[in-house]
Length: 425
Image: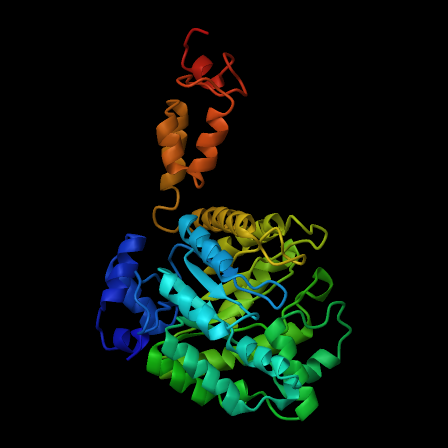
């Protein structure tokens, strides 16, 4: 049985207890959210790690993408990136590999991961076809579902599946003049396949089969936004909304069966459209957890998109987004390196925490108040303890001052805190 099905039987599982303890909430809160679909616990029955929940009333979680590519395939480097994810507080990691032995890479990363683990199964199918010098049109439904079952059996906790790419949504896509077209890799593959074959998307046509696999292994379905906007020009357009309407129907079918499901969202969105996008998703998708990439609020910052993503992510979180996919400085430029991964995680964690304060998540302000008290007391060890990156904070303090000095090099003896306390300079 899935965690949702067990919750509806009024059973509190070990996973629910673990998730509740992490949030400092009662297990019953998690159980109720699972039962009504506003909370999920992405945890495959074949993957052992401390369970974490995503959804309404909970700390906003952070996902980090790693993985090889056709032009850069170095498994040790990806393991190092995974370790960086673990060190700097990512709650989940997605393997988006398209280079090398994908099954072996996935197995190694899975066995090394003590956090939620996600994939995009169609990448493996498309990569295999291209290596065989075949066209994407040669893909058959059985090939795709076999790959999904293989990954589920291996222990993948959640899978991105672009079920909302249909003949109908492509017709809407073709009716508008987009600046960037389709920027989702999985979405573009399926659009190409449908146009070349004339067939319906198998992930949509045989959705019940997908639900059957997900139910068997308790894999969470992440309904991908294959028509998400890749520029501010395309934000909140008809293709994006037409796909969301389809995803709303699919959410309902998954929830009725007791399969855990969340919905992915844009993308590139101007600041003034973020609230509308979040509230629209929640309304159409029965308050299923919302998983957002960024969103990026401007298109002019290659090399700094972890910042544009953090700005959008903070706002999206404050309006009810539950899960943020990090954006790194390498977005739109190249495969991220280890430092990019760190920067992306830190930026997204700051964004999520900022939004959680607004949402009123339990204890969200606790660390802020603790570090402020420590600053007033010039208690540097306590400041570092509560810092989001204590290593960096300690390093910057120590490299500019003599050990034991209780002020920073910014103010020196003109320390406002000391003056305020009436201390002699």
